[in-house]
Amino acid sequence: MAKIRIAVLCSGGGTNLQAIIDASGRGDLPSGQIELVISDNPSAYALERASANGIKSAVVSKKDIPREQRERIMLGLLEENGIQLVVLAGFMSVLSANFISRFEGRIVNIHPSLIPSFCGVGMYGLHVHEAALARGVKITGATVHFVNEECDGGPIIAQKAVEVLDGDTPESLQLRVMRNAEWVIYPLAIEKVCKSLLSKNNV
Ligand code: GRF
Image 1 (cartoon, rainbow, N blue to C red):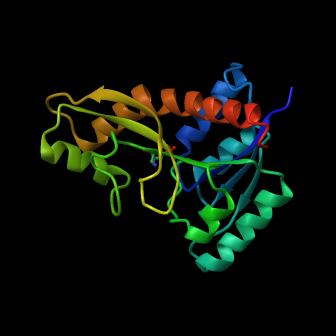
Image 2 (cartoon, rainbow, N blue to C red):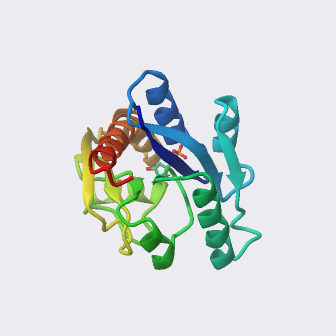
């Protein structure tokens, strides 16, 4: 059966990458296949996860290469590997409008809040959970969305709510959101997008 060729872009721990690899291993990603992992950080643990699972990887270092050149290299890698869907999983570089337009409707991201709360410029990593705790919300969660030129502004694909508990710290909340929402909905949403791309015969 045809599968959508996926690249996962990471910068750090890669726990979402791992959740997608695990889902694939369980047979829960029948419409897609991870063909490539790209990291903008040479010491990202995500690279170890790729190699431990026999997935090809590449480093396009944010520290050493200016954005325009980095994106040119990344676009080359995506093309060489026949990539049809780009999955951002803790990827800490902002993509240019030019890059996004080359993969319109084919880039997805996961954000650790219920968009439109606690999102947009500067809202990443622990900052998101700090803001949720500071506002005193009782429910937060995660959102999978398509990427467009507006930061965290693309069409929403999936969301899952997570309870905020008394005594939560940004770290404890981050972990609960990852475990109970991100790692659950990201593989499901990716399968949904791959299935839809296959059915549109738009691959
Ligand atoms: C996750 O919280 C994700 O929502 C955000 O960055 C974090 C990445 O974690 N975009 P990991 O690299 O997947 O472990």
